[in-house]
Length: 73
Length: 208
Image (cartoon, each protein chain N blue to C red):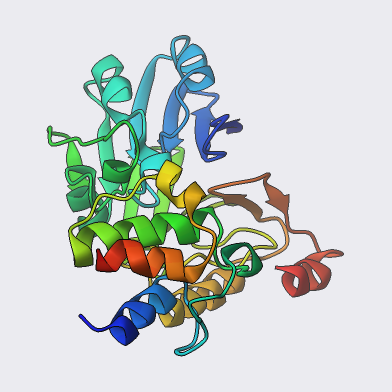
């Protein structure tokens, strides 16, 4: 999966328009990154990337790039 | 009829208990909360039905404990919701520390426009209101309207979770708004109930 596709998945999970997010986008600045948005990303990680992502791990993420790196690894 | 609302302290999801005062029978809407609900039900003759608005874990969290206490109670919901009851990934409890699933009996699928007569004083109208999940139902019982998470006063419908659909959610909100007549008590899946009256109808509709 390309990096762009990962961005698109994240944007879709947060119900954002395409190409809204950049690697340096700070998660706390995204209104849609609320408890439901975080749960949506946890589901995305499991179903599309077969990776278990926990709420505790999400607390460590500061930027969208952190999520992308996790999903790419 | 007497309505009780109990809110889960962590999930904030509502469990509603509707009591028919004449027969002392109860009907539940969702089962996320079961501490105060259990205390109330222990004094009742019987529980006629559990109506599920949808199967997200915060609305079904105590279903196993409840059905163990009330094995004769039937569970009414959409096909999708009943399927999700037995699938922790669909009901999202898989991503919670305490997965929930129920695969036992007593499940009765209902669809849009169905009318259930649970007792002489208890008739339920089923309104399909997808969007938050594909299987969301709203239930109208007398002047009570139980909308689950398809419609919560002052909040945008959450459609970013698995199976959510923004367009369907908007259509369902429009359908529910048509049902908000003066006298209706709106009973959402989270938060307080909201009384629709002649004087606040316009203000209320604009706010919602």
